[in-house]
Amino acid sequence: MTGPDPSFMMRAIELARQGMLGGAGGPFGAVVVKNGQIVGEGWNQVLSTNDPTAHGEVTAIRDACRNLATWSLEGCEIHTTGEPCPMCLGAIHWARIGCIYYGFGIEDAARIGFDDRAFFREFSLPVEQRKIPSTTSCREAALRLADEYTQLPLKQLY
Image (cartoon, rainbow, N blue to C red; front, side, top):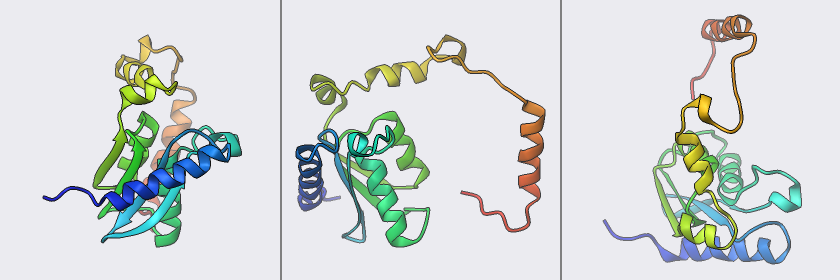
């Protein structure tokens, strides 16, 4: 296997720099690539949109899905300036992206003030030991809803 095409990472870096200098958010940009072509682009827009989920990877995934008119990015790869945080990693998995290329790592991000290490540690703990408490609520009603979903004739699993 040959290495990644550096032009894709350079495009992600360019997007991140433009967003960063424009005040949109941190130094995070990403491109989604399919068959050697960029199909989605994104950059961190947390500050410009007041949306804590508007990370570079998430905005690139949204753009790619919109452009390809699909929720599945199977057969795609993502090139992102920083190693994905837990949220972005989850989004990449949900989108079915097959390969991740990143520029700087989690430790590098922590050094500049974006420390995801605490999230990784927190998610590895049992639920009862996590800082944000969580418990079930209206479980029976929610289970009925889930059962209703299983009965839908045209449901599409994803």
